[in-house]
Amino acid sequence: MLNQKGTPFKTIVIDPPWKFIGGGNRNPDQHYDAMKLKDIIPLCKDTLDNYNIEDNAHCYIWCINMHIDKALDLMKELGFEYKTNIAWVKNSFGLGYYFRGQHELCLFGVKGKGSQVRTGHKNVSSVIKAKKRKHSQKPDEFYDLVEKRSFGPYLELFSRHTRKGWTMWGNEVGKLDDPIDEPSIGEVLDLYPPSNGPLEERNIWTEDRAKKTIVKVR
Image 1: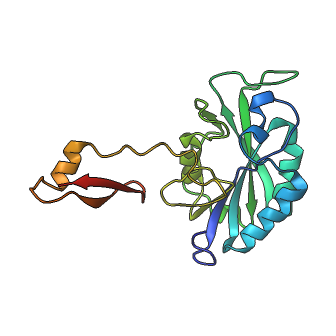
Image 2: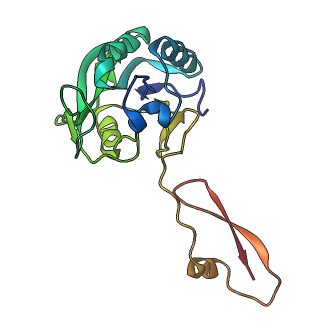
Image 3: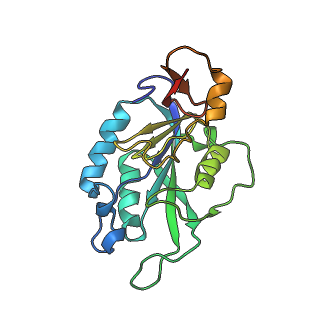
């Protein structure tokens, strides 16, 4: 965990691992440990207690259509007042009994004076049109929208990826990140010109993420 009890977070994103029955291999239980609301609420409360949250803050909570009421309960339990929602319109159909789902909602709420966290942008749409990616992975356009509408610092709970300038919490942080390309032999030779000496290991750190790649050069 980063920045615990440090600079206060003004914006929180929560992507709960909602538990539901059905869906076959698309059921969340096939991809991660899904949870019921009665377990999600205390975990979120305990986690946020470990961080410094501003008195005036914004909160975004993702929810599946059958659990909108539960997402509203979660928002209220965390001390935020529901205001509106964002719809992610996807490029293909999902599952559904009455209608084939093609959108996902993210509820938006505020605590204290939400206007204090609102940026000056006047034309932030409530609709995101973006392609589906890996299971449960949210589009980059959503995070662009959050940064356009709400001031940071930013904290995300139940995160499965990383993003520059954000603090991510969860037991699978980074799992959905795109793989980092290994350095080419040309890049390695530019960094370490060949010599007649013995092979040795050198560490190369990527610029976009703190990941170490071990290469052997002469």
